[in-house]
Image (cartoon, rainbow, N blue to C red; front, side):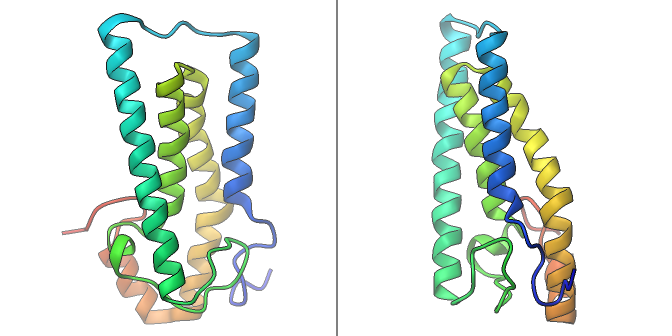
Length: 161
């Protein structure tokens, strides 16, 4: 694979998150695990709504950044620009973080534990099949600018001190 021109030939991240969610739903249908009721259940549902709202906000901010910088959002296409501002100043992979939050939040909101458990599995698979290759692509394409950005910004969330 020519990592300088593009990181992947397959758009792994959406496939992995959707696939994990589908498998989780099938598991839930065949072997449902009871979700707590009462106050505990309500708190988990509120947490689910908060995660979903946060995921939507992160994804919207990331999409707007891609548009503002005139570069592709597609995970299997080569980057034209290195985005280091806005939401990308807080996370090198905000859309994947948003996808994780969306799946986990949907699980909490709906009371489907399998979705909650599928979220980190999909995130780890995304790291292996997409993020590592994207980072190699960005390193080859943007050199020292990428190195500086990588050292300054966490992969998932928060500024490094």
